[in-house]
Image (cartoon, rainbow, N blue to C red; front, side, top):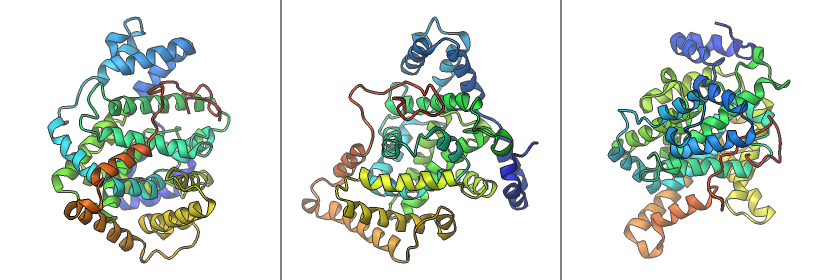
Length: 390
């Protein structure tokens, strides 16, 4: 097995902790998504207009909607239509309930913790070169929020639902970016492995699910065991739609946390691209939250840094060049605030007339919805700040 040079030291440490899991992770650092990558190569040969039309029709209507498409493309979309045996729609409703009942805490955990961990890996090299986060941080936050909001709507992963379509669209965007970065002079395979590798996508899915659940609980979310299991099942199905290879697809919360842990050990320290992306996201969050004046944005940003440092820990925060902060009271104060709002909504609803409805409305307001509906355009170059697909 060839190890990219950036991983040499961290991989050795990870093997000392758990050699089989470390080896599994590293075997996928050079791998992309073979099925989706094959489709992107085929569609690229057809030209831009037809490529976009086939991709949109395939995601919207499946293989029957693209009868004239190349056979491998039709087979790909046919495979996406198959619902896994382990996915239970009725049970998924418990995950939706647990998520939206605590959506303010899940949103805080997502922005201040999960996205930070996700972009602290070498996946930041792919996004850094493309400019997909740094150039348009607020837009990316809203896109990420929308994906999460959609998959947790009741029925959000039904074949005709936006959560399903967004999950597949993400897979195709990743494949397109791998295709473009393959020929980019900036990409160094010997040092970094594959852009948007199978290891990174699996790590991201495990982090966005299990670590999101863990951090939301830390911030005060009350989620039952069944709701937690359903939450993970929803994420597992979305992750499979996003192309996670079977051997790296988590089965449950415990398994997902193990993938996250071995990924943290295998990955080298955060790069300068990680630092840029994380700070762009945190500063963008204050704008996303509607802070209009510079003073308000500074206060909000300072608070997010404190909460984020408390969640991800001082070591990672320092590696990402966070400003110094005392975090002793950050989480307890937020838990008290969240718990107080929960109790008021339950026992004195007149004092919080919107209650859970208000949380739902806030989640939607922080998500990206565009007048022309969902876009299926994919990037045409590996870095173009004005590309409308971004």
